[in-house]
Image 1 (spheres, one colour):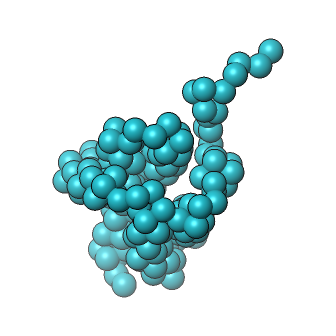
Image 2 (tube, rainbow, N blue to C red):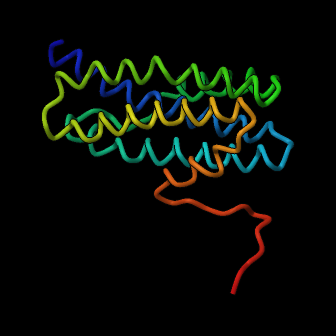
Amino acid sequence: MDKADYLKGVRELYAAEIEGEGLAARWLELATDPEQKYKLSLFLQLESEAKVRLRPLLARYAISLVEDPSQRQLGFKEAEQFAAQPWREAMAALSKLCLPYAARFRSLLAFAPPEDVPLIRFMIDHEESFSKIAAREALGEPAMESELVVMLAHPFARADSPIRN
């Protein structure tokens, strides 16, 4: 892999998060079940935080931070497919969707300068962890509210949670 291929991979990291953020935002918009809306809110937060975390890496290589609207649109289209499925079925499909991204990002590690390695590893872990969480959701386990929430830098409680003094 030469530098151009590596930089293409770095751009793909960002594009994946734009797509994921679009998917989560649109699916949240389409959801009607309060439990699913909360979980999709956490998923949206996860994708947004990962996208923001990648910006310094892009800036290091003078890669534009301007988002490609086609990536977000791709996420919107995926969301409409997921939203039309039963929750468990959609989670099983989403779990599989993450794995090629993790594999692609893993391929960057061998060529990453030492200063990039932590962010590349973060993105691999991000995709693999979310894949496992979605797989558990597909089995009927409430993994998003127990495992995904702890991955967030800025977690939030359910809107229906009582305010505590």
